[in-house]
Length: 417
Image (cartoon, rainbow, N blue to C red; front, side, top):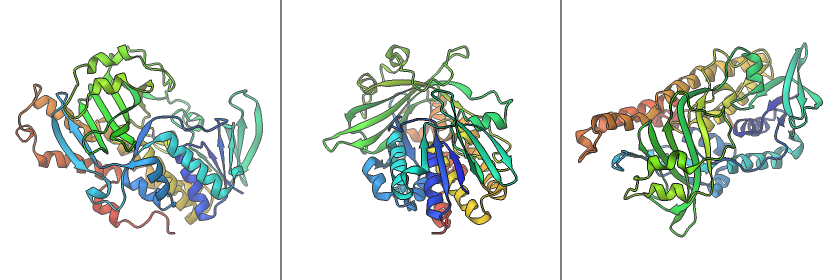
């Protein structure tokens, strides 16, 4: 029998690749009929990149992403607060990547089909329900476009990697109200523009109330880069945040005026916003930490288990780690409830801590500290905040998310190869 995976996102596909690496049979069902490289940029942190390298994807990642050089923080006046190297330059054995989410998903999808065969992924098929029996679990499936019932699948365990609006999570926690909005709206886009700072810098400016984040996801080789950017604004409590309409086009007049004077010597932010290929509006939402992910032969993975604010660039990375740990436990304990319980015990509390840290603005909180102490700007950052305090904030967050440099470099592989 097989492992049934609901969802062909980054977490579900990484799990498929990991199970194939371990010789464990599986089947992925995906609600979308045709996977296309949609979405915008994300960052993959070294602890997740390590896992993708151990799946043999290093050269492919270099073709579609950039190895991030640094993360830099700036005040709302454009003044440099703090910068630190990333990836190998910071001392990790693995890089950090800034990459287009859809292209990463397409890479995982294509690689999995090449290695395991096209029939391991069944598109146009959504999880509707399941029933456990003495011999395993039967997943009831539907065509989401038509609502028609499809032939069910029988397996040994069911892994729900079906996103923030997970069908499985809703059935396991029927009283949960759904996504939690913290009051911030995000406008996101991609702009072909001039290389800035190192040419591979993640830059953040402003405060939690008004923040601009940008990073290149492609080097065009002519002094220009493809800049992925996010403009955050805190909105009134009664703002109509549109309940997670991920395809809602953004309107410049809703946010661009709030950044109109952010023309800095390192980047002309109004120009970047005005010259975007397209703009999308998203609410910044997460899900409350759960007391359990695994129930008998069913478990949650990725955003279905722990959707989090995009602070500290850890959402996709944590889903990749989920997949690797779950594959390890299925190898150790066999394809049954014991493996799912062991996975839950290894991952859940650690990731719940990341959800809560991100609600506290993660490492980005240095922006608010500086703004509170020097609201009109500063001449020397050392007069506002010490380098030791800045390093403490950064290292504290790294410890929570599993990115402590020495610990990660010394840790054995999650899966013995």
